[in-house]
Length: 186
Image 1 (tube, rainbow, N blue to C red):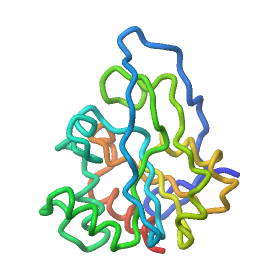
Image 2 (image 1 turned 30 degrees about the vertical axis):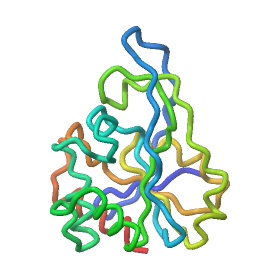
Image 3 (image 1 turned 120 degrees about the horizontal axis):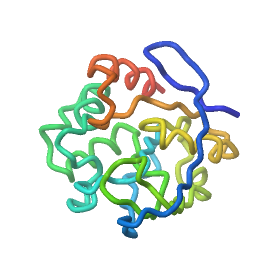
Image 4 (image 1 turned 45 degrees about the vertical axis):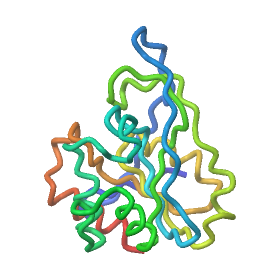
């Protein structure tokens, strides 16, 4: 079962590359963040792994140039960029959205997804039971989206959305927002 990629209204099959790369000499072991999730979740947004800025701040999408909170806020019609992190978490949960990453731990030098090595996935087994309303998993970018096939046995629809990372410069903000609005419409 291939994941669906939202490409400004057009759907295409996502490529499935390798998820594990050889070790990098400068890579260090890292542990991800706990999920922002509760039983109201209808949509789960999965990134790959937190950036260095996010790990340091202990907050998802803390890098100032990442458009995640701006795009999510516009898609949900909530002023997320004006809120502190605790308020963002509460607003996201109230909107029926959950946020997590596909990897629990990995080794990485820097923040690029391409530098992820020796990744260990999060345990998604209890997800169906703890979030009975969950009907869609949206992946924030192609690296996270490679995980769609592994989550297929959960029986939840998967969509790969354009990455909100500043590294994804080929997509304009407006084009990303249109895709995210479509992806979050459940």
